[in-house]
Length: 207
Image (tube, rainbow, N blue to C red; front, side, top):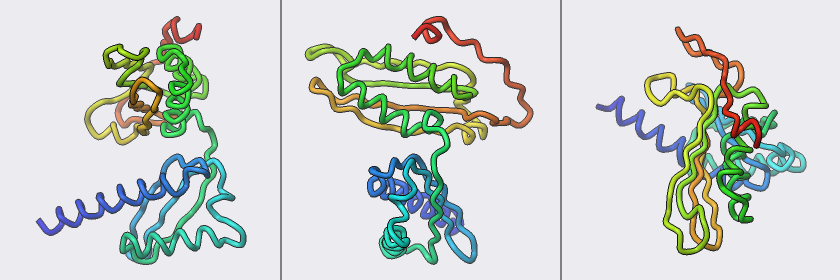
């Protein structure tokens, strides 16, 4: 039980650190974070669009951030590494935020989703799924859900750990819309599985 409790506590701390960094580094284009705990230190790798905003002049910003994480989450010897996002179309949080912004501008939900799926696949993803839930039409319309997926997106088993996933929320005038994006990045190898070539629907190809 002690081991299970420790595992649960570590998972909660990682989740809270992720939420904290997502808020603090939003202007830097925060995408995701990887946290690896070792006997010596806790390595926190942050992926952002603008690393300079995280590091700051003479490293002042990253030093402040490191000290804040140490005190706020009781993390011993945290070490933050900043990595620049190589391709924003393969980062679920950045894609979800872009979709949310387009929803807020009133662009047709289905067109947005199909267009974004095409861009994700054009950038080499093995699979992608976009789910939008909420008031997807004008004022007075009922809430509904649109689910679009292309390629291979595992939903169960250990292989789901290979899928990157993120959420964002749009706030158009007629009601909130939740956006979930799931992406299997290029080069992903699933143990014991052979992935077939992706067949892209015409609706997405022509978007």
